Image (tube, rainbow, N blue to C red; front, side):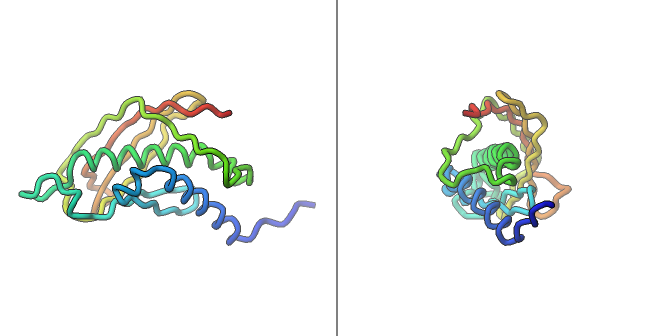
Length: 162
């Protein structure tokens, strides 16, 4: 006979705590003000608009560096989240285990249009993830998911498993 499933509150609490720990372990995320909306295993990165993020006040448009940092952060968090998901669901992740994040090898950003002075959203998709190397694609939009303002492809060195 199988053990009964865990209560949904316990599962959600474990997932939320793991995501909070992952995001809290990167000071740059707090600096930009990025937060993550989690629905099951799917993450959406949110960059709330702030005046300090404007690079061209005449348009006004989001700074390209803030946009690139947002996309890279979304990629790294998604890659880490995907890598830890199986252990998280099995309850094998200790709350005090050391955080090991992938390291960026390269990131190519395509600026498709100016980022407007409003909140931005991004979703990353892991194209390939092995023991040593991973490739991730990220898309960012503002008001309309089908109307991207930037996208990026990044390659990352995965942390050692041990």
